[in-house]
Image (cartoon, rainbow, N blue to C red; front, side):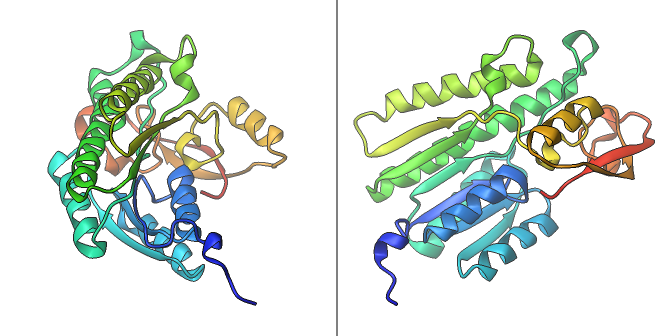
Length: 254
């Protein structure tokens, strides 16, 4: 049985996905690859990126990975340049990397606020600018996709929601700037998604999400930093670390 080109609508295209080591980013990367794109996976930790790459390769797709800190504008520029050098083009840029601290404002840490804005807003700005410049230089059509959050539309969503609201404004502004060019800017605002991004929400919240999804949670002991959503404290700067404690953490596949 022959396979038509319509089965691979993104054949010959090049895409970049930040935060591609798991969750929404990995799912997007796999779908782009399944549609025929060569996907460049970007993130801070190498092991999850290798897992994402292998998943794509096992499905017959094309993927490369780059370990970087999305908050570093030069690293983002280098990523875009590498994709262009390797494939001769850049068609899709997905700014997916994100970070959330959910503490109330009156109990919040200014260093965490700064980290959220740098990751959720400035990194997306850097990625959008670098991608748009590359697409312009090659005179090719392209898409810039910003993964926001429904938190941007909800009252009481805190500083995290503020970063996603800022991302919406940036996306709308960039769309206006590029309206006469063949570069489209898209904002995606997911609601709650069962990924490790939110694995340290209060147990009652996680249990309800799992119930709605038809899943039963399993638990294991893990180190938890109250000031950070990761369960590996050494990833954080000493300035914003709190004393870790042991607790039962819900576990589900990324």
